[in-house]
Image 1 (tube, rainbow over the protein chains, first blue to last red):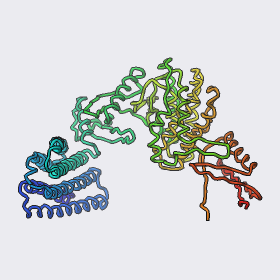
Image 2: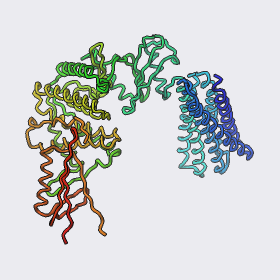
Image 3: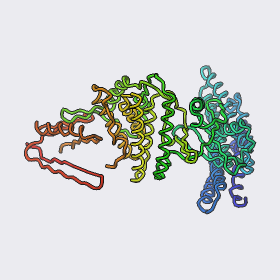
Image 4: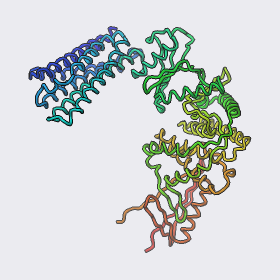
Length: 548
Length: 76
């Protein structure tokens, strides 16, 4: 790749310089010769310079050249990350040398096991160039593993120092040693960034090393013979839930057989696995198949069937009325079947207000003005937010559903996949499924449509129509099931979903429109609290967006 | 010069609840004293003498705006 010649050359030199920096730091620990100390400081200036040159080269390559392939851009980005982290390692070397000056005697440090740190870091640095230029993931993983080893070494040194702290004659020396080990530990962190940058340059996707390992294990567990380098990985970010989701394409199959890779906290992934299995007993075709499940420490991953189709939300945005109507029809049919099939005479209380309370700090962090106090206009009073929540919590205690059904748990319009050809809808993202109050799914669905920040009149009209139709359908189910508190519970569910959705919305007017709807419903419920709930009805306009 | 005092609120209501707010204001005008409180601050208004009233309405497609404005000066 002659195009990258200058980048290649500079990064090779930089790695060499940082390796020397590390060697000299070790020499200084043994014998702090002033000339060598000066050399380390001077070399750090040179390394800083390399970093600036590489940064300039990287940015000018990306911005100065048209038609750069993604692969080339990814390589340049990786080089930039690597040079930033190499420079940090050099800085930490200088910091260590400076700390040595605070020791009452240099051999104080010699009582501690520092050489293995240097060995691990030096070995890892040797793998940077072959890893980056040969796109070799084994080298990348080996660099990442060095961080793990350095962390383990640090833990041992840390524990030893803490143990000695009580009886030590000179605590200052001990603290200085701790600082030195801490710099070595931070060198390990920089190595991890370097290793992950190489993984990125190979994969074209930012994968943490544990995510990469989970991906390899998952593919291994389904006896996939594809070389990991050849797997196409297309990230589907799911920033809110903290899970990593990616679509994996098999390069051997042109038709694009794909599977979905999901990685995250094991508690959540395991719960989703269990829920998918529960759904498959009730409605096998409604949810994706699980191909594999792997757990490692606190994290877990799954390979799932990649369901063909588009989300229900996409059918709304496309404004193709017929498609949206068809998707809605299938959703209604599916929910009717699920609810009829799974209905149990077990009363349940969704606890919407306690769900709201759990998220209230997140809302007020984004919109502190939503924390309102009591307002009085003459003799007319409206309660403060705290008071509203208190009244609603009390009111909710007596407002459970008399029956339960198996619910999706997060029936966001994005979590419903519509397949026109198969005439079917699918449910995804099922970690919250359980036997519960179907009103929870209804409220989440309605608000997930409302909160889409799209203000085109046609789209808003489609959303209003969808919500109205869905509300009528669910209200009819409620009437047929003798569910007389449906509207009151839906009001609670809408309050919860409108209020908590504002934490994702920075458009003040739009957030305000959701917040005001939540409060309006709260005031309605509060003023109705001494009347029979069967007479409470949701004002039809409340989940329709209108621009004032 | 006295410090400027302000009161403002914004909310979503329906006809039924709008009437409650208007009733409260009507009572205030009748008594010659409108008390407005928010966040530990109370603003007492004592409408008296001549009060300028303006009512403005605007209708454009589906958007409708009706504003009622009262202005007066305090009686010494």
